[in-house]
Length: 411
View 1 (cartoon, rainbow, N blue to C red):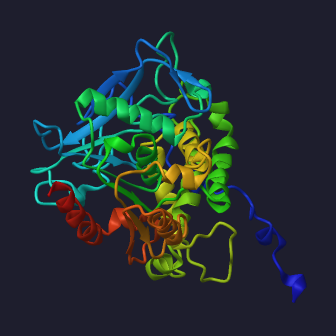
View 2: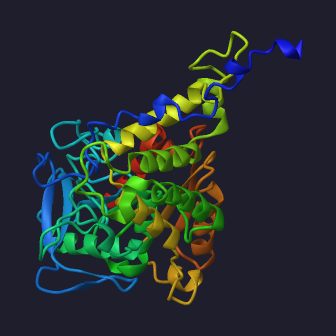
View 3: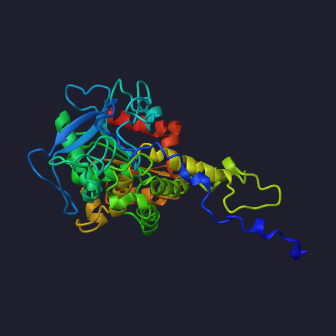
């Protein structure tokens, strides 16, 4: 009977914040950004805009900019065998190689770079740079100010994909590369690939944008802006000025939540269901339901949030997702068609059949828009259940596409 219910048991902190929200942050620095006092790993560094101001597309200004980069293979005497890789949102210059001191994770395209692989380093000189605004060695909000004590923090200006590409062009100049054999990148990296084709059409022989778009859609903006709000609502974000905070006192919860939100968009319902189903972490058996009992998929998302806070910076996440939302090839150029007309290199746009974040139709539409203008362009689709992240996971399919393309460039 209802009169027999134990009211004390029913009312016990059912809505209280659970212990696991701590996410093991007590010993973590306020930011996961690389610091000059950390081991450099395989990074190399270029200082540029030392004697002049770098005027950003959105009106901000920077000076004494550092670009962190890595290279694999050797540049040919004619400097005609260089390939530029452009990384995605939370990637960095470490596209290949093991984790180690100063390198918190293995290379993000480890399976594609090296002798005999798709990006054969016996043949190609492969370059990858951490983007402007990033946090793994290139100038970003976690960097020390060049002219006074402290770090940029909230004073770091908004950057765009075009700003990133301009710093990469400076790097190419410093390396003696007048023209890349190919520029390849996925997601935010694909946006950089397209901007290279528009901004520097004579400096590349082949463009391979993967899982990207010509301009961010409303839904894509909605996804990323939600993650930015999660960070801004973390009281430990401190409006972007948190770098002097004690370990464990940084905006870890906001950044972890932003990553959890984005991780959902990177994969598919099929993958989540096949991997986790309705498996539980805290058992539901026993007749008592608690608000914070978790399913295994929740723990998976927590794991990815916890991983990111150990190697990334909340302010960089804000800046780079904003750059992705601002991405629009046609802005200030008379529209998308006029922008695409500037591209002179062949384009192979790669989409992913199950991509919910940057759907395959966007890559197909890019190729079609170029082809309709008589351009050398075509569309290739990866058939994968893994969603947006498939270009990082489907090494065999990516090799099957890239290897023949690069053979053609070399011939």
